[in-house]
Amino acid sequence: MRTVILDTNALMIPYQSGINIEKEITRLLGICRIIVPSSVVEEIERLANEDGGTGRAAKLGLSIIKKRGFRLMETENKGDEGVIETALKMEGAIVTNDKELQKRAKELKLPIIYPKGENRLVLEEAL
Image (cartoon, rainbow, N blue to C red):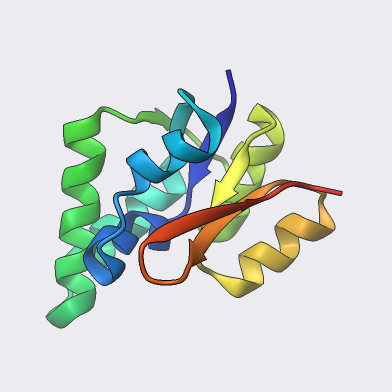
């Protein structure tokens, strides 16, 4: 079973782009294990307290974590480093729209999943 690791902005994609990330991940990979690092939970909880679109997107992301029961994993590192740490440990693909994180993942030969167009995600396997 494949594993995917969700970045903070991956959890906000449904609000920002209307993409059902779970459905799209299943379309790309079939049934898989979806993990949210603790560093992502901390960041999205902080963002949920902001006003405006970012706060609303983060609140939706938090509700997705709770409703879908994604697996939470403790990380020693914060932010993107926690996402990378989890992906390396679990040999998983990273779901993100963050260009810098995509670049780091490619350098580390990790697969990435990111939005393409208005309503779908694409998988870029590590080379």
